Length: 348
Ligand SMILES: NC(=O)c1ccc[n+]([C@@H]2O[C@H](COP(=O)([O-])OP(=O)(O)OC[C@H]3O[C@@H](n4cnc5c(N)ncnc54)[C@H](O)[C@@H]3O)[C@@H](O)[C@H]2O)c1
Image (cartoon, rainbow, N blue to C red; front, top):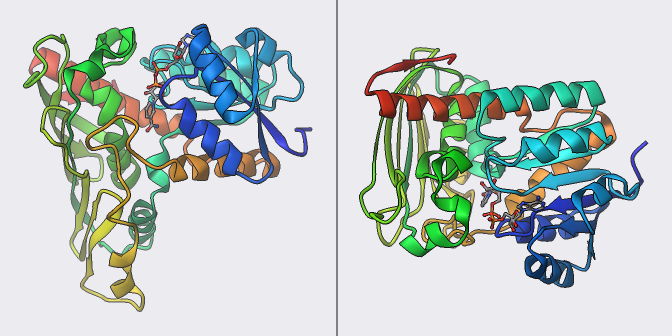
């Protein structure tokens, strides 16, 4: 039985940890117990700011019975190595996106989760954004008719100092690069809304960061299994950075989200409430277009609340490892396509 108040322990006190700290503090029935990080200054600062204990090690958190859930907030290629032992120790796990860098590691986490009969949620928090929830529901309700086309357009800016903030941020095998690090959320949204991909074709460029051996720009075409087509354009080279745009087009409707807001919501068959849909979201809420920490923690809070509900009710979190696996497969196929200069079919 989990504790009545679910206790959380965080692994990694870097940039994203503040979002988890605030989200847990804001969630009724959740308590932040401890954190760990080999960088002592970061650990001390985090614990002072969020009023939790500095665990002597990750292993100490696994042995701590007050902790029900471990949040894995380490660099992208260092997720499974914490998630699997946490599951084996009987903890539930929240994992920051992407789930890890290979499908094999995701499959190992699925096996560990099933063996331990615990919950795993992936922090793809944009799936909780209200306009995305509305688009998803309208697709389920058949309002778009046949889906024809979807677009994810991310024209962001990060200057070179971003890539040098931490060692892993400029290393592709560690999970750096615009495709896996930034566009991943929006590749995931297309997967969420449009379903599985059958093939992708991608090109990658470095337009504005000559000091870094990475793609800062992605262009990708997607053939979905349904027959619908998709496009992803994503960059961290385009100063000053503008709001992301997600577009869904079907035979009977079009919806567009820009930043946090629904800007277009048009269906041939109108329903009461349609006119209010463009009031969803807030144009003033930032969505990381110009800075890595330039967004609100609200969606992380929805994700933590959803995880608490899944644990208490023995349900599934909204973003499971299986869902994130499909998005990872699309991103990995984009890298393969750009490297090999050809269309790549899925599953890989
Ligand atoms: N959901 C989002 O919108 C979002 C936004 C930013 C980052 N992220 C994700 O969060 C994760 C972390 O990103 P970040 O920007 O915070 O990176 P970061 O480099 O700022 O922080 C990572 C931290 O992990 C720590 N760490 C490394 N080894 C450790 C160990 N053995 N034990 C404990 N801690 C250890 C590092 O010392 C560092 O402080 C990444 O997977 C990233 O993709 C998600």
